Image (cartoon, rainbow, N blue to C red):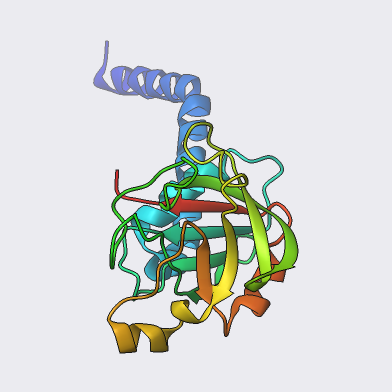
Length: 213
């Protein structure tokens, strides 16, 4: 058996082996490529929101069918003087709004550490929420939310936890007092921006509230 014959047979063998394995390998490679492209498309958002909070939120967002246009991320691993309320347009891959947001009085001072689902706890709730209806209350234009995680945040409506504007969530309040004001559980955002943000995210926009586990 000549060396030339052995080389030809080896070549045929390798081609057959490649033909047998290509579909699976191609599928894996395509999935990996798609995954990498998806991650790359979020790079600009990641630089604004933060990697940990963003991908934790996207993991919950990916469970939702059909996928909504927007996603709100609240990052309670950050102190109150940092922007930690983000409105993300998933379709266009942009952060449409970023602003300050309060946490509850019994959850911590500059940064929240304790969370609760219990009425009268005056603590913030975490996990996945959905926005619901707009209304006008004692804080002006406000937005009701419903918790999607049983036993974690499903009491928010009976606790009257909403998103609303407040002067104690303004940058000027922090500069005067060294921290934002705290709520009884509501997500208070600056009064100067709430009328721009709340109508945009009303009616079933998912909101993921990230925290240190």
